[in-house]
Length: 99
Image (cartoon, rainbow, N blue to C red; front, side, top):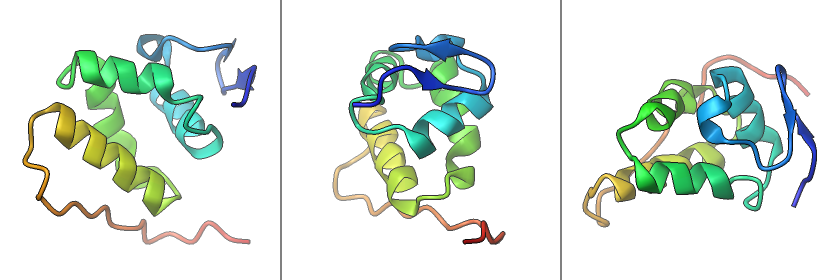
């Protein structure tokens, strides 16, 4: 697990997802690991239609890793009660992030 992650606007251990701006959330998802995402997943589970979930929805298509984006879309759908057999795909952004 990555400790002491640096986000654009804050430095924290186990940040409260409610305090994260969209860019901070994007950095967490792109550079963090499953251990870093625990607090976010707890927040989504406890309030799947709340402010954290809405922020996540706005940035899902910006996440460079399609696997991470799809993981969080599936989790969000599951917490909202969507059927498990629903197929979820997250389109890749058109822009090229470079090598």
